[in-house]
Image (cartoon, rainbow, N blue to C red; front, side):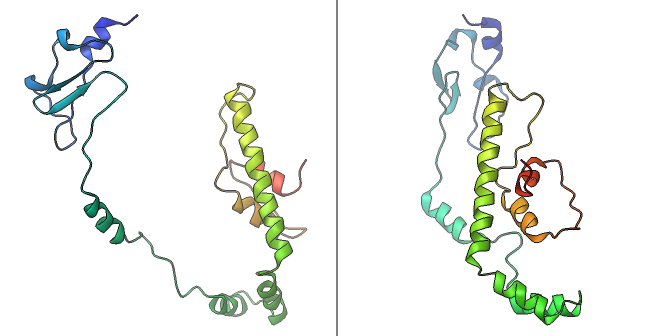
Length: 181
């Protein structure tokens, strides 16, 4: 039932700092090892079942750390539509009519619903692919696109006839968003 040599050679030890410190006091003897057993040795927990023990930090400290969290790169507050429109005009030579068409489409309900439907379709397709992959119906490795549905949806909505589109290695949702059956 159990390979005793393997179990005898396996041990788990947690020091107070959370790192393993090998010493003679935290190595269990073979007599202390049995299926599902758990022993405490010098305040270190050695566990051979499916359960572990840990200490939880003070919740007040955790809340303070969460409140003090600063993202690596905070959002750029200067990225307003007025600044983007100015860049489109000055840098890229867009006309005022083109910029106005982009400004009005930002709140276009039909465009947003189309994007949402595309994202939902991509997510459903990815979930079906994952299910078939897990059942062994798809061979090889499957690079799923879950969590990135907005990219193919927005790209498909932004490109025009005549534009060239290159996808990366997760291309199946790009094809789906572009209308491939």
